[in-house]
Amino acid sequence: MTSPAAATNYSIEKRPASYDQYEFTLSELYRNIAKEELREDDEIREQSLVQMREWIAKHPYIRKCRTDASFLLRFLRFRKYSVPMACEALERYLAMRETFPAWFKKLDCNDPVLREMLEDGMFVKLGQDSDGRMVTMFRVKLLNVDKFGPLEQGRLVALLIETLLEWEELQIGGFRVNIDFTDTVMKHYGMWGVTDMKIFMDAINRSYPIRFREINGAKFPKFAASILNLLLTFASPKLKERIICHNTMLEMKGKLEPSLLPKAYGGDLDTDDLGRKFIKHLENRRSVILALDDMEIDVAHYSSLWNQSNLVENEVEGGVAGSFRKLNVD
Image 1 (cartoon, rainbow, N blue to C red):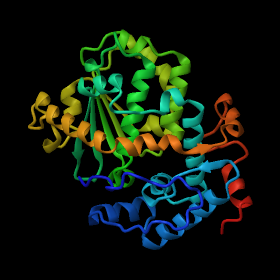
Image 2: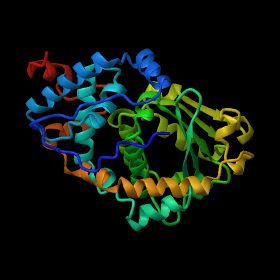
Image 3: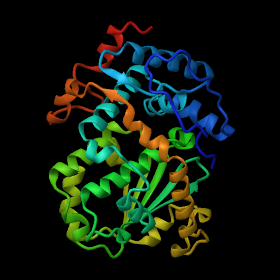
Image 4: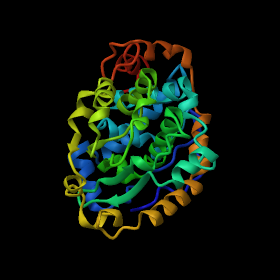
C-alpha cells in the first residue's frame, strides 16, 4: 500500500496565494472504484476542489483550515462529490474537534498513554484486500481496561482514524474492520457512560469522513449485549447495516483473505512486525497530525449541534446547503 504524501507541513491559510496541483497516482483499481462508486474523474475532482476552496475562503466562521487536495479530497470522496455535503462534513469535523478537544486534539503518538496502548497491540493494519479495501483488526482483550478508560480509548481511535485517512486508498476504497472480542470481561464494556457513547458515536457517524464497508465482530459476550444495544442506538442506520456478528472466530476468519490472516488465526502475517511499522509511520507523520489542531472555526456558532437529540444525518445548524448557496459558489 502506498504511503501518504511525503509533505509534513500544510498551510492553514484559508485564502492562500496559490493551491497545490493534484495528480492521481494510484492504480487503475482505485481509479475504477473512484469512478464507479464515488463519481470521481479528473474533471469532477478539479471542479469540486475549486468550489470547496472558494467556499472555505468565503466562510464567515472558518478561520483557519487546510485547503490542500490531500485534506479536502477525504471529504469530497466521503460524500461522493456532493460539494455542499462535503462542505457540511468539513464544518462538522472542525466543530467537533473544537467542541471536544479532550477527545480529538493533541493526538500525539509520543504521548505515554497513547504509546502504551499502541504497543499493547490491540490494533493492527493488515493491508489491502483484492477489492481495494483497507483491512484492520482489533483484539479487544489486549486493551488494558485497568489503566485506560473511555477517554483514552476514544483518543486512540481518533489518532488511528486521523492517520488512516491520510491514505488515499482508504478515502476511495473504504475499509473493513474486524473485531475479536474473545476473552473480554465486563470491564471492557461497563465503563462507557451514555455521554461518552454519544460523543464517540457522533464522531464515527457524522464527523469523521470515513467509509465503512464492513464491521465484523466475533465472540461478543452475551453479558454485554445490553451495552452494545445502547451504543447502537447512537449509530446511523447505514452504519448498523454494515455490522456483521459472528459466533466464532472461525466464521470471521472466513471474511479475511488468506494473505491478510495473522499468525494468531492460522495465517502468515506477523502482527507484531506490522504494529512496529505502523508506529514508525505514526512517528513520521506526527507533526502532520498535531498540526490539525491549528485549524480554527467559530465553535460558538455550532454550540447547539451536540445539544439536539433529533438531528438527522447530514444536518448542520441552518443547513449547509443553504450557507453554500449564500456564499455564491457556482
